[in-house]
Length: 493
Image 1 (cartoon, rainbow, N blue to C red):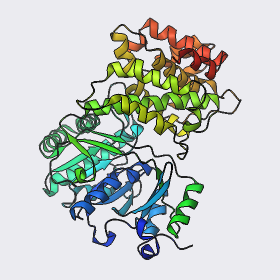
Image 2 (tube, helix red, strand yellow):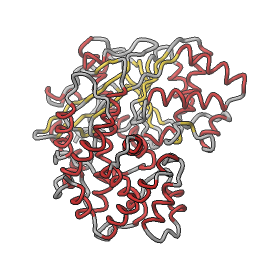
Image 3 (tube, rainbow, N blue to C red):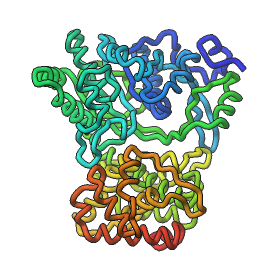
Image 4 (cartoon, rainbow, N blue to C red):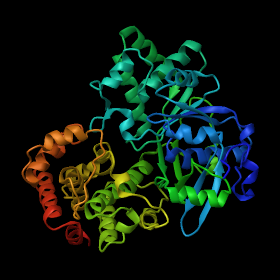
């Protein structure tokens, strides 16, 4: 079968054709972290915006950070790929905004030059929480990270924050004007967090260089906060086969997504931007309420189901949420623990949103693996669950459902195997530290004590809270002795 490309574009069905002629698109953005989420989310909004306005100057130079895989999939396809949308029915469409591709590890100097190009007015990022090499508990750049310090010392930058700062310095030297950096990762106040990490990197530079760079960035760069929402599981061979059947050509870059899609953006840009509002994005002065709802209701629930689901031996979220009492447990987590911590925007129907979330979690057409969501828990827990626990404890309440979710993570990183004896593979940037801390832990209390002592994850407030400590130990023990089903049933009410 022929490969999807500009040469074969006329062979695909009219219904799947990109809404913008890829040959008419010129680059206006750089995107760091060219994974499935960007291709199923921001790239979709960008193509829709160009189609709606006719302004085709917002093509993307896509940069993959850790692996050449995406470049190898998309380069022979001239950057084209499809989005396979799955729900009760399946649809497919070809996307064309990605016009150039770079692999940061071997093309970091070209990446810096692209960030500094006068045509680049927006830089977007989806590099996952761990990609920022920061301490999730404090939100600061890790100055003890050898990769960060190598970038500070002047090598061709390999870390995301180093790439941004070196790109901004190149813009400063070239006097090409302002630029906006749009973080689209699940970090609290993500734009402000990224701005702080950039400032931290600048502070590590020699004094004269540091002061000049910080002053230029303060004047010429904006870091708006955003909230992004779409469930995008990893594509499988079956997905690629379905894409080929629907398109009539082979697409090795297909991404899979649910129909739902949302993007809320702080209206704070230093220069021109795509008309994303024409594609349905929401621009606002305050993203924080939307961000908190998404991080705590969707992502927090996802993490809870991921760790409990892995322990119970479930491969997919949609299957686990159908297990007895799981949906009721998740709804209780949202209603009793999370909702009291939210500042819901005027006119937003949060009850309907929670109803929709449960329906989205149960979408069996999306094969969203629990193990995929469970990755990098040390980076995700603070913004998804630990903030909820801290706020509810400050209010004098005991958030049992959120505590069980954190206990499930503790059991997940310490158990080595699930309830059926299958090995658990912990994929986490702190995996070595976690293993070291757990060495010799004899029981649930020791597991909890040693994990709570990891200051990169847990705050002093939670570490010193006797109720939190006891409850976590009880739940870790219950998961070990009674299993997931019985433990969840006791809390589902």
